[in-house]
Every structure is written in structure tokens, then in C-alpha cells.
Image (cartoon, rainbow over all chains, first blue to last red; front, side, top):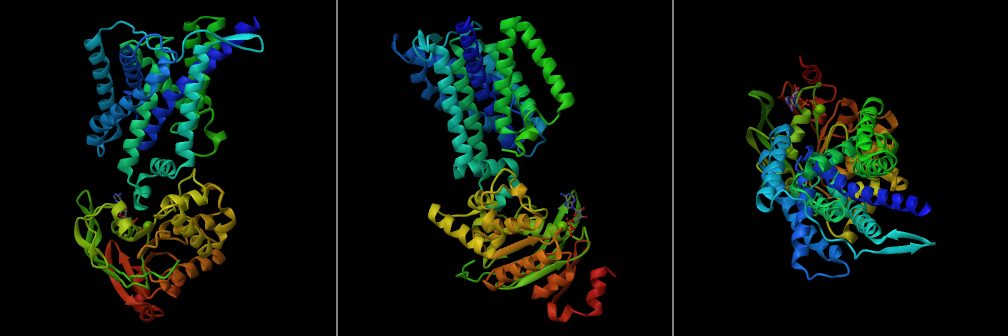
Length: 296
Length: 240
Ligand SMILES: Nc1ncnc2c1ncn2[C@@H]1O[C@H](COP(=O)(O)OP(=O)(O)O)[C@@H](O)[C@H]1O
Ligand SMILES: [Mg+2]
């Protein structure tokens, strides 16, 4: 009983940490260019597929296949992010934000159908982060897979946090996100910070795709659901607030996992969107927006 | 601020700015000598901010030329202009809300870590009110402190041309006096300062020249000594 509850909590945290990665990337792009990247969900899916592909090149029976695949996924997806910026944002910089919405929706569909056309619509099994088994803490056995997922996601989130909050480049990136005209006037090359934001966003999406690809498999049509979760997390977290969105995503996953455990996944999803409507109605600035008190 | 090694002024030649076919500024020509303050006066909507924005490069000009010293910057991006020695403190301050005083100065300062730390130190000497607020986020500062920070951000790279857009707006009289004294010091250290202001008496008290804009046109460009107490100047200012 205690073990089941502990495992449930670990599952919730693992999914939460992965959703937080997805939402972080999503909101980074919103901050950088003031427009939503509707292809973000497809980037998560693409990251999962890249992980499947890279893992197939590795010898079987490695102790930490996912961990070995991770750097390649991050690198490939960062390049994919630059590509997204190049085709769906850069040409439309001076156009209204709706043009970027439409271009990224189109790009997302191209990615989804491209993957389906290339390798078929079937779900694929990604590499586990670590070989299966349980770890024991104080007499409670917990799945190693989930713990490794948490560790990886948390490491990435901490890395992004250090980059954005503690480095000069990260602060310049945040300054450019808050007021790009002002940032340019003090010498910040905003096209560089925008490109880095897209690359980072896609790399995080890819990492999330890898982390989901073993437990949940990866299917070419996964993008829309993930995109919706990221969008909801951003709304809950206070539009455009980086850490608010990450927290929002975490909350969604915990809510889903716990409610699904008592009822069913469908009920959990339905209640989630009821909750979102309530947030929009009663706290339009987001659950964490005002508490945080500042834009990050 | 340390003594500027090369003394470089600002030259604006026949600049005009249009939006959707209507001219909202110009053609305007202004010269700001290094080490001097030129006050830009005029009613709301006269085009003061537009002139400063055109020099900073954030509003495109339809024609005319802008020079920093001998270097033409008319077709240069704002970030390049910053590197070439233009510092702009915009209307309404526009501080980065999540950044502290230290971080705000650090993102605007050029150079390596040591050089940036030295520059921040110099700014804290020039703006002592910021010295014990270094870890405070910008939005928690008082209006006067915010304005000082916005100016410090504009001048930390030691630009030869400093553009200040209504820096005294919303400040108490005592703080205004400090503000204008600081602006005068920037010029004394060698900068060419173009100052848009509504506080005419204080602007005149530190300016070497004064220009008046009305409906986007430059209608007067005089030494301050000639303007003070001159009824023609008062009339120009009131748009008569
Ligand atoms: N982005 C813009 N688009 C259209 N008109 C503008 C824009 N910015 C300023 N204007 C117009 O240009 C004129 C000058 O404005 P501004 O330079 O802000 O004047 P001031 O700073 O002297 O109050 C005003 O009539 C204003 O309405
Ligand atoms: Mg103005």
C-alpha cells in the first residue's frame, strides 16, 4: 500500500518533470518572439523518433541506453529548432503574430505527416534511460526507470535555470524577451538570442520526447496532445512566465496521474480542462503569475 | 564616468520620419557638440521622442543622415549604433522587470567580467542612490532610482552620444535637481547629450543650446543664453 502510493508519487513527479521540459521550451519561444510555436508538440514527438533511431544504432544490452542517446537527441533537435526559426519565424518577423501561428501549425503538420510517410503510423518504443529494475529506499522498492527520468529532467531544468538566471548570456536573453527594442538599443543581438531560444526550446522538447518514448511509446500523432498540455501549462503559469509555465506543467502532470489513479485517465483529462476553464475565469493572470511577482 | 578619450559629437542632417505617408518629424537638422547639452523642447506630440528614436535607430528615417563624429549611422542597426557610441534612455524608462540593478547594468556593459565590474562601480559612483540597491529588482525601486538606473544603463558603455527622453518625468523636485546635475556631469565628462524635456526651466539651467519642435518641425535653435527670458523663445515654446 505504502509502496504503491510511493510509486504513484514517483510516477507523478516523473511525468511532471517531463511536462515541465516541454512547457519550458514552449514558453521560451513565446518570450523570444511573442508568438506561439504550434509545432512544439511535433518537436517532442520528433525528439522521441530521433531517440528511437539513434538507439537502434547502438549495441543492445547497454546499461544506460537513454542516457547515451540524450546528447545526440539534444544536438539534432537544437538544429531542428534553428530550422523551425529559419522557415516559420524569420521570414515572417515583420508580419503579424498570426502569420507565425499559421506557419508553425503548417510546419507541425508537415513534421507529423512527414514522419508518418517516412516510417509509418505505428507507435515506436524508445530506449529506456537505464536498464529496468527497482531501487530500494527505506524498504520501499521504486522503479529505476522513473527515478532516472526524474533525474534527467531535473538536471536539464536546473541547467536551463542556471543558463537563464545565472549567466550573462541568459540575462541578455531574458532582457531581449522582455523588450527586444530596448535590448537592441543596449547592444544585444536579438537575432542571436532568438535563434538560441528556438534551439534550446527544440532541444528540451527532444529530451522530453526521449524521456516519454519508453514508457508511453512515441506515435507520429502525439504532437497535438503535448502541444495542448504545454499551452495549458503556460495559461496556468501566467502567460509568458518561464518558471510559471514549468510549474504549471508539473501541476498538470501530478493532477493527471493522481486523479487517473483514483478514477480513469479520461476523467482526469476532463477534470483537467474543467480546472483550466476555472483558472481562466477566476485567475486570468495564471495560478502563479501574481505570486511570482515578476516576469522571468 | 571617466573622461572620454575621443570627443565625438552628434550631427543630424535633414532627417525626416514618416508613418503611413504622413510626416511626423522633419526635416530636422541638429548638431550636438561633444561636452555639451542640447535641450529639445516642445509640446506633447511635437516629435521629441521620434527624433531621439531616429538617432537611436529604433525608428527608421525616410531621408536624411545621422553622424556620430565622422561615422554615418543612418543605415545602421540599433545594436551597431550602441557599439558605435550611442546611448538611449527611452521615454518611460523601460527597465527589464526581472533583473536586479547589478544585472541590468551587467547586461548593458561591454567588455569582459573585470571590465564590466569596473564599469558598474563607476556607475554606482555616478548614481550613488543605486549603490545600496544593487540586489534589488528594478520594479521595486522608487521612481527616481528607476530613472537613475535607466540612465546608468544608457551610459555604462560610455557612449559619446547620450539621448535622454524626459528623464525628469514623474520625479519630485529634489530628485529632479539631482537628475539634472548628473546629466550636466555626463556632458562635462565629454558626452554629447541630446535631452528631450518638458521641465523647461531645469532643462535651460543645464543646456548649452536649445531647440524647439512644433508639429514635427524644428522652429528654433538657439544658444541657451539667447533663449532665457527672450519673449520670442517663450512664444515659440507656446507654439505661437
Ligand atoms: N509609431 C507611431 N505611429 C504613428 N504615429 C506615431 C508613432 N509614434 C509617434 N507618432 C506620432 O508622432 C508625433 C510625435 O510623437 P512623439 O515623438 O512621441 O512626440 P513627443 O515626444 O514630442 O511628445 C505624434 O503626433 C505621435 O502621435
Ligand atoms: Mg515623448
